[in-house]
Length: 213
Image (cartoon, rainbow, N blue to C red):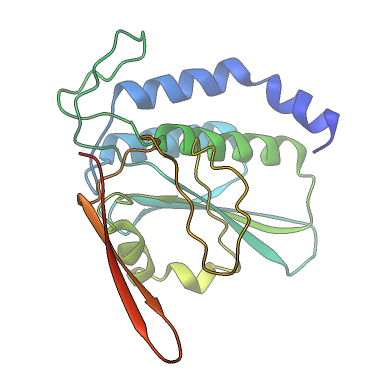
């Protein structure tokens, strides 16, 4: 990434921080993120230049912008639901909703995507179509199917995902290597164990991985 791009993004740091703090204070659970969805749509309208479709998969949002004459397109995605966990700290932006908290970083994901929306709208330094996908219900695995059922893939070219904060070391091993850390490193709405099946042409093996509560 060029220095000019980084400096441009850094110039909006205070705005991005205020957006993230607002979402962190007001977490909403899967497919109940009406306030967060409204906040996202309002920020996109303030930024300007984006064609916004709300209510995709109940509370999801798709925003599109075309620049130039290229037929190429790309999609960028972020999730924005929270977890049903009490936030136990004294941070100035601590959750104000009892029993709900953004402890999986979705407020950060959404801030990053809004930051990209701001940068792209201000610079228009691309040729083609960019679509932003704000996905609800990631923790319960309901949001993506709901958006797909509403015709999401009709507009989709590529959909990069991302995770924030895992800090996993570079894995060195054969195809199929699974990596983790010997410590808690991410929160999720998943069960307390995961069944992993490994398939081979001549055999199938299965192991049970127990997670810390």
